[in-house]
Each structure stands twice: as structure tokens, then as C-alpha cells.
Image (cartoon, rainbow, N blue to C red; front, side):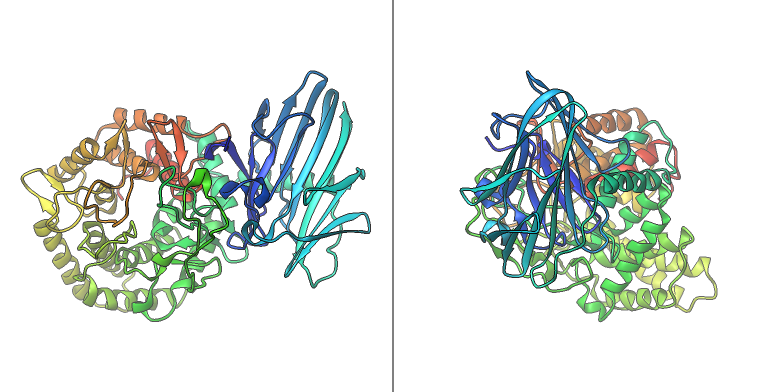
Length: 597
């Protein structure tokens, strides 16, 4: 039986991360970076594609732990197993690395005595390569091509090879412990230095305690907000400040369907909302790092602006399929890379310019070239905003005049005008951008609004709706009490709701995305509805929906991209940064923060 997506918890070292199931198995880990090949890929296939399970002897992969939780406000996971002979705890974590990434698993006896087993199946390159195993200096060493992994235990336990796996069995009594350390490094390099797991655990807990103490949000949802912020931090590639959209690739938006994409990259669409979430919670350093990543990534010809980039700003993210993997619950294809990188999405110009204004307003140190970059982007957008595009949902059908894209073009011009008004010394033609702002505004009201139904539509001339129009009120395109805003909120709730949660758009016949099948409710859109309800004066409804969304989190506070209300399960890549950003922003709004947009 395949574990559900929400059965997994995340551990990470701010350069990559692993997913640990309730059954004690690490089923996903890419080394050395988020976007590297996976050495544990059972999540998208089966155990033969790589995993590492530590559990009481006699339990199989379908049996799950008694309970689990993170240690306070950290990314250190404790999993408890209660057996007839005693209770044991497995502590899983990845210390912030010095040079080499480590996965540490400490088995501690809590009471009685428990016989334990460890089965390690390393499969490099997304489960396709079986490494050569050898013993060296008290380690089990796996080598294949560029990859090398060293495994040791303290105190040493006997290991043996079985069915291309490294197995061990041992017993822990109350007060005893066995620590496993798995370390990756390039196969051509010498063995990395040894790190004491117990000392690393103390340092890791201290690091997270210090980081979490910086949170300035103290509303009634602090636990949920802080866990979401920790998750966003875990999805941050520390060397550059880039934040991946999710840890995984190809987790399906519909079980058995084809809507399976690689989310291990950094999307510009997330930038404004992510910056706002970080700044509102007091994480200015992280906001500055994200802003700096943004400036580096988008540098160059404005016409070449991409919707996403690699962890360090890489531009080439070619999409391919991995035919040897059977897919999560047989959802094919399994993809790496993302062909949407070549799409035209005009809204990202607005996202970048809005993000840089948010950063400036928050007092982040201004970069000398940031304003010139914005002027360059505006110059391109001025001549291009009337073009059709693929829109923020990266549809793989024909280009359209998406309303959200046009609204974000308005945002670009509006933020430029406001920046010039607030900073008289900056160069720029405010009248020019006011004219563009007015032209975009007039066209959207004329072509993107249905006066009969009193709602903004998905694209010009369409009767379809789109949850992205919920953001109109947040952007300031129209005031919250405008009947057209209220009508749009009501129409989206009525037509795109599934059991009270919001889908991105209709996926029925002739859908704009050009793909077969359906998908679940998009959790970020449901948080946008919370924000829209609050801004339009319906606080009680907003709070009720927010509380319901909190209940969808798993036992360790994590959210995927979507939710299937009929099946009562999470869908899509996981954990999803956009969902957790939505949670933080909605909580801050509900706490009474500035609602001016």
C-alpha cells in the first residue's frame, strides 16, 4: 500500500531535504541539492528505486509508527514506536552542512527493549543506478559514477548485503542509543570528515531555536504560522537565497493522471507574496536573500525574463521523462525539468516590480541597479502588455488575454508610479507610467469584466472564471467595496468551489490548459479567498474558512499543493511553498495587519 502524500514529514539542511514516512522510511532524497538526482526515489516508484527504513523488527512497510512530532520549533523529527516489549524513538534530522550533506537517524530506547532493523537501498539517478558497495574504515561505501555515499553507525552494528541492500539488526534498551550517519560526497573526493551525531543534534536544535525565536508574529495562529515559516526556510537554498516551489517532482494533481510536474525550481510568481510573508513575520534577512536572488536571476534582456529559474538562477531547465519509474500510485509520466520555463507569462513582470517595491518599503537596503532593472522591465512591458500569454497557471493550450496577466501589468505601472512619488530623486517618467496604468485599467474593465454576471472572467471574451481574480482586491486594482470585486468573489465561490475549497479554474471540456483529466482544490487559491472575504468585510466567513484550511494540514503541519475533498487527501507536489505562504499571509491579515494591499 502506497503511503499518502501527507504521510510524509520533511527534514533538511537548507540545501536539500528528505521525506520520511510514518512507516519509518525515507522515500525521497535528492543529493547534493534539491534539484539533483534522487538517491531515494521510492516515492515515485517502489522500494527498489531507493529508500531507507528503520523500524522495529517484524513490521512491514504498511505498518506505521505510534506517533511522531517535530521537536518544538525545529525540523528535527521524533518518531515513536510502541511495541509489546518496549518503546523506541527514532530521531531524524539533517544538520546544516559544513561541506557534505548528512542524514542522521538516532534510535533511542525509551522503555523496555526493542529489536530494530535497518534496510538501506541506495539507487542513484532517480532509482536507476545500483551502486557498487564496499567496506572501508568502518563504513559501508556506495559508489556509482559521480556519487558516493558513506554509512556508519555509533556504536557500530553488524551490517550485511541482501538483495542489493545494506541491512542491519540491533537491539536498544531503555537509555541506549544507536546513531546512523549517511554522508554524500563526490566520488572523486576523499572521505569527508566525521561528524558526531549527538553533537550535531544539539547544534541543530540550537540553530532552529534561535531562528524560530526571531518570529514577530504573535497572533492566535502562531503555531501554524511558525511551522509554515520553518517549512519555507527548509525549502530555501541557503547559498543563493532561492526558494523552491516544492521538494518533489511529479506528485500528481489527480491520482493516475498526467498533471505531474517538476517543482524543484524557483518561480517568480511566488515572489511578492513570499516577500510579504517573510517581512510580516520579521524575517528580513531571508526576505533580503530572496530579493537578491531575484535581482540576479532576472538580470539580462527584459524580453528573456523567465517564469522560473534554477536554485542559483539557472535558465535551462529542459523537461524529460523517467520511464523506469512507475509514478506515484501509477501516475505517469514522471518528469524532471519543466518546459513551462519557455512560456510567456506577462504577470511575472508585475510580480518582480511589486516585489522590489515591497522590499524598498520594508527598508531593505536598496541595490543601485534595482531601479534601472525595473525601468527596463517596464519598457518591455509597455510594448508587450497587449499580447496574449500562457498566464500564471502555465497552461499548455493556446495563448489568451488572461485577466490576471493584464491586472499584473497594471500593478507594474502602478508600483512604478508610486515608487517615483515616494522617492522624488529617482529618475523616471511618472506621467508615462500613469498613462500605461490608465490604459491597462480601462481595457481590463472593458474586456475582462462580465457586467451581466457581475464578475471578472478568466480571459477576454470568456465566460469561464479563474481564482486568480481573487487577487484583484489585494493588488489595489479596485477598492474592496467595489460591487465588481464583491461580485467576483461571490462568483468564484459559487462556480469554482468544491466542498467549500477553491479550484484554480474549470478543467472541464475545452479547458484552457489543453490537458486531460481534473485536479483537486488549489490550497493557495483557498487562502486567497480567505483574504478576499476579509477585505470585503466578511471576517466571520474568512475565519471559518481559514480554520478549515488549518485542519487540512497533516499531523506535523504540512500542506501539499492541492486537496481532494472527495477522497479526503492531499494532492500535488509537497510540501508546497505557495500553500504555506498563503497560510502565513492569511494569518497575518486575520491578526489585523495592514489590509491596504
